[in-house]
Length: 400
Image 1 (cartoon, rainbow, N blue to C red):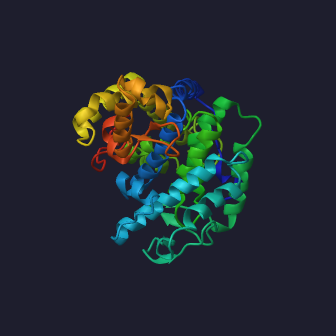
Image 2: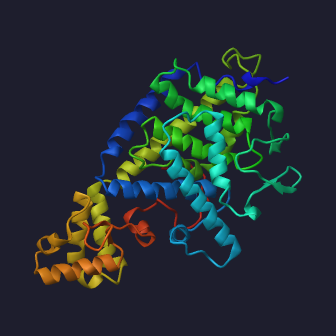
Image 3: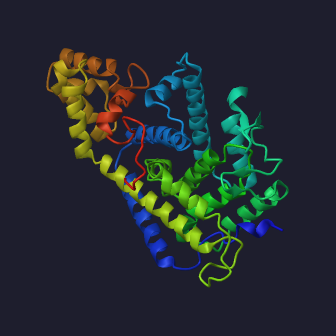
């Protein structure tokens, strides 16, 4: 009979050198990434990263929301088509939960936090979207934040008996918040805790999304989020087949005939594989964003955008680019400096500034406040190539 210790081992204890090296690489790359941008641009790209997490987490679940639809939803401009509107509402709920989780400073491994993630995600959704599907395809109401009250099977995974889920979650918190874990071990444990939470399967539905939101919060609390500038979900989505395969493999019970498979209920060797995959994915995604946010390269792509892509600003592209480059390098600048930046009269400076703001390429908090770069959905493909796919991802090969 399964007990609260059924999630053991909770972290690999063998062959640690490779995992520790990857964890150190992540710390180094995340530190470099966090220094790439100045505020307020860093904050803006951080918000864009939340869009990434939302977009790719949905994509893992087989649901693709266009970035422009997410942008429209934030402006309360919902589609008339029910399916598209549902995805917009799902995206808004996702973004709001991320903002809430980013502000939390207490325990992230406790049942209260995990249940609150679920409650905040599902509570704003309409009743039609708060449903759970049984293994027989039956639809039943889903109570936001409530632990499952029945046994489940998802694919080949048979969840532990629902009666012991509370005890499993208590043990989950106790083990992963151990004072004996070093920072390196806590980073290695990101993949381990991601799997173990999925294995517990605490809710009737939504466990995948909640698990990714949980891991995102842990990454942020450990200070390796690079200033909020990268997304683990993007890496999982771009290697979706491997992600699911390694998750499923880590469900294996320990092989009693193998001396290197640990001494817990579940396979330590399979857990090591998922931890290595997660760490490798993290390192790849940080490196991808570090390259993407290189200021010289970003400036060249912005220059290309105003000259070639956006017909609205193309007639005065040279001067518009000078303003955008200033905002890129400084973070923001006072409106009164526009004439000096473009090397023209005050009247011309104001005219070019108006052109850039009307196009959404420069934005400000108020009509007289300093201006900063705007990042509307229309610029993403040029400014940040491969951040979001032009078409739905079909390749599952390992890529940045």
